[in-house]
Image (tube, rainbow, N blue to C red; front, side, top):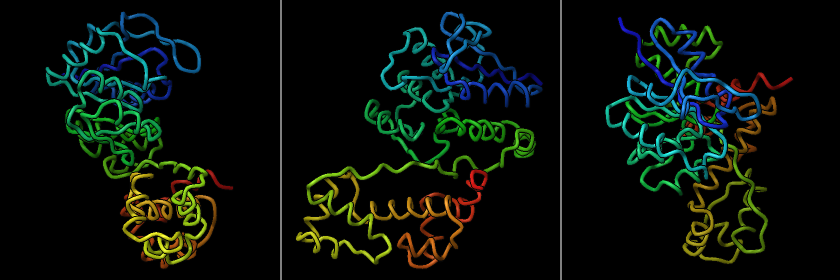
Length: 316
């Protein structure tokens, strides 16, 4: 059986782990099924973000025989314009039906080539807003690890590239092959299209306006049984006016924002304490452990216990 030709594109200041993941998974762990090559614009050595350089196997001409093209993340992806030859090569590969894949900020390269138009995609959570703003023809989901279609796939930040590669192995070779490689690289196999990115919630900015004050009060009152009506009354507004002004400032309805903050508080407690799930539920404002489990799984696709287990390695 002919091996699947996979081409990894190395852009200047490529992120070292982003390109190393597909090289290791497909070039080392599954080399019997994949013919992996690396390329750069012009075929020359490429600087790696953080120092050193990497020498590719060739130039963009190697894309002509690709079955899958992988674009790892690279530094300054939000604002950096790419060489026209690269953009044209990506667009041409996409038109030929080549599977197009990005890891982390590599999504910006695919977006600049028009590959992501009309799709729901993802990238590192810290870059999602920029990706959505610069490319309105696509939809960005910052919560998932892998997003896209069977022929165009994007992944979240850095180590989400592992989930993406296992997802590709599962699609190409079946679940047994994916599980085998997952064990080899000491990675717990999981459904990449279901697991969520662990998104760092931004701190509410200080402010003198009434909505900022309401946000700050809600954050310190998460344990309480808060309703939009009660919060609006506390700040001398009708429920309708509060809802409208809150959404104008945050882009979210008050109930959704409050739920997100409670989920964020629950994550902090699960990651950094040995509190029971019931106590986490009480302190985060979910009331009962059962309610926390339902809301947490709905927001993250994992249970509170599974989330805690994912972070157990970092605790004493």
